[in-house]
Length: 98
Image (cartoon, rainbow, N blue to C red):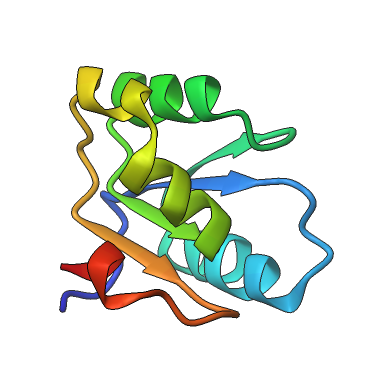
């Protein structure tokens, strides 16, 4: 595992009222001086376009987004530049991780 660096590009999905989003995306991103791309809400097609166009390297995601990235056919048509994707709040099944 590597740590977030100033050259990284993070993506965040609103709302940021949860402590996870505030600390993982905004807090760490601002402290490290990263570029942060913020989406007004989760839309899979927009998320994939942002990840591809902005060369996002870190995406702090929750299990429903991880499931969409693992299972939706749109994802197979897009090159994802993510070097690390984190998911907290609920456990993920082993089939999504491997």
